Length: 100
Image (cartoon, rainbow, N blue to C red):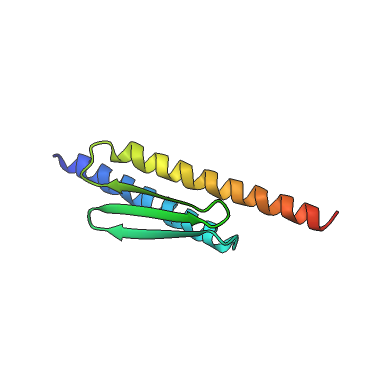
């Protein structure tokens, strides 16, 4: 693998991890009772969640040796962004009901 390819991989890992860490922090700060756990590993990243309202557990992982990791990393960032948006909407609707 060329130096350029290795630098490109390192760049995408860094960008993806920063996005994931930021989204996990934002989601956990919303305080809805749902908890996201983030585990960084030399082999990859694992995000897991337990939705206490729907009693559902999910886990997604991206491993650096997976040839599809850039796409999988992007999908994980998109899923976390969707979760954050849904939680924000739920909080807004609860606030609207409490303050007519």
